[in-house]
Image 1 (cartoon, one colour):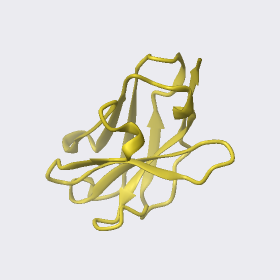
Image 2 (tube, rainbow, N blue to C red):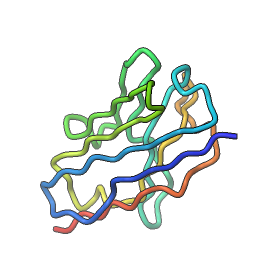
Image 3 (tube, rainbow, N blue to C red):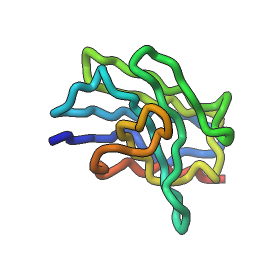
Length: 119
């Protein structure tokens, strides 16, 4: 059974930066597409960024040029470096394994980490 543990969220001012981490246990991490997703209040959860086992990345248009996803297979960890943060980035951020074609989440969700951006 896969367990996901996200961390690194917090309260920052607009224009600031944060680095999120997610450790996955109980899975063959290195063989999976890994992604970050977020859910803002009153909105559906959306894919933010994904990284393939080979390191290829894809981003939602809203975060391109501001977010960078990376992974460390030796540590079963995926990261999300966020910069140029905006109030509309406020959300609970989750990691998950993504379907290789649709990027739909495949595992049960962790607790997420809250990111709040003040204007």
